Image (cartoon, rainbow, N blue to C red; front, side, top):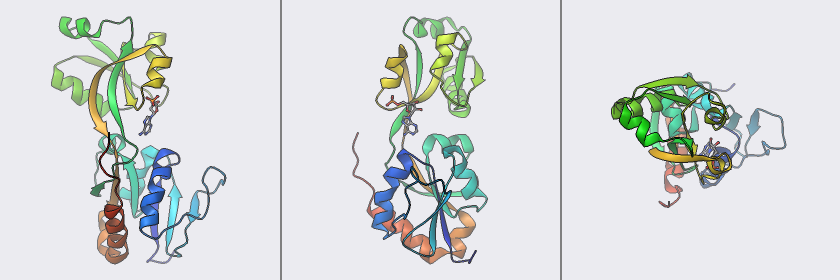
Length: 219
Ligand code: AMP
């Protein structure tokens, strides 16, 4: 690989789709559709820029260790990763959602919290959940899950979940109610700190173009 190659790590879905207009502002066009291709490395119209497709939770890891020079990742994923080795120049204001606590509609969350009983919490976001309940002074037993958190309160695995909520439709469909909003989430540009020194000019050009194309604040 030539040393002037710029590698951008993205995850498929909302982050990929919402990053495309930002790339366009930098004059970068991805030449293959990740939903149609099985390729993990996608070329762009710029010979020295390529996109690698990785799991959302792996984006900070790829950028931290230089497998990619830069990437786009949700604040939730960034907090759980810890952010070591990552320069975080921009809140891109895309893929917005929130991290919330949800319970079964027949579970009395307020009472459980007031009584000081131990709360069984299932989540993929153990750092965020631990910090939140520690600040509230609520004792929790944490159950780490990797997906389908909504199922946990329905099967008795947990009293509550901590999960991403956007429209709230997924919670509603599973008879769960949002009882606390922990934090608002959006996606960030992250850059490998060493790459920023070695490939300063091309990376700065991309960062500046992204900055100029960030969608206006809307909720
Ligand atoms: P919703 O039904 O619109 O509230 O969306 C909730 C579901 O979509 C949950 O399973 C979340 O994990 C997922 N979700 C919502 N927003 C995002 C986002 N910005 N990034 C990744 N997953 C999300």
